[in-house]
Image 1 (spheres, helix red, strand yellow):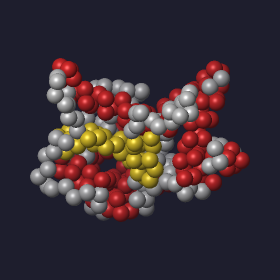
Image 2 (cartoon, rainbow, N blue to C red; image 1 turned 45 degrees about the horizontal axis):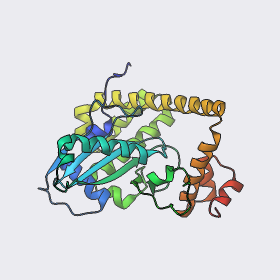
Image 3 (cartoon, one colour; image 1 turned 90 degrees about the horizontal axis):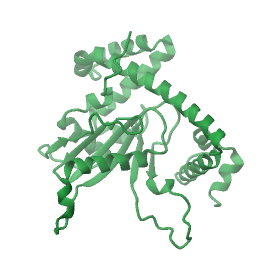
Length: 292
């Protein structure tokens, strides 16, 4: 089956394309009480490609809060930087340029950033990625406080992870089950298309995303196959980047990034084995992270 390479949606973005569902999703992620009549407006970046990825979901709540959500099946330690680019463009769309030169104080909506991860590699239930983790070491030791910061909450939504958060949003819980079924059937059949088809049949039969899958089943098949193609391509890009980095002597920069990730994971209570799996660092290097 040929996939539509111009299709910009993902299953996740199509599933959460309704304001009512976005209210439920934000209630779950933010652990807040949000009235059913709270105005929600979608302002997802469309037809704008940043660093080879589209913005998944962006929406306003009550005109005072802007929420950016990215769905990831691969681990990306640079999400804070990507979110920085996204929010800049979202705010640029909201605010007319001439408003920047007014004599009045300009109020902007408060941003919140989330990444929902459901990849196959092990990952903590929750972790915070900071833009300042990507900064170079300060030239002057006394100037260590970051003057620019952005925090992204990364939540693992694989089946069995973050149970309380996922259960607060029925559609998110069912989506998690659906993805788990796709992966289960993929191991069984070793055929992507058949795995998706069987997962759709199972979920419809068991009233899991039934209405959505009955209406959009063929699109879901098409989108998931395309997402897998992109994931395969990303692995090639990453390998090419590693090779290029070796040729240009950039190994030091990547090692420093891995050390930052390792340090954050250790502070969150992750095991040494898990940190090794995520970063690829040797045990001795990881052990030194907390001493630096």
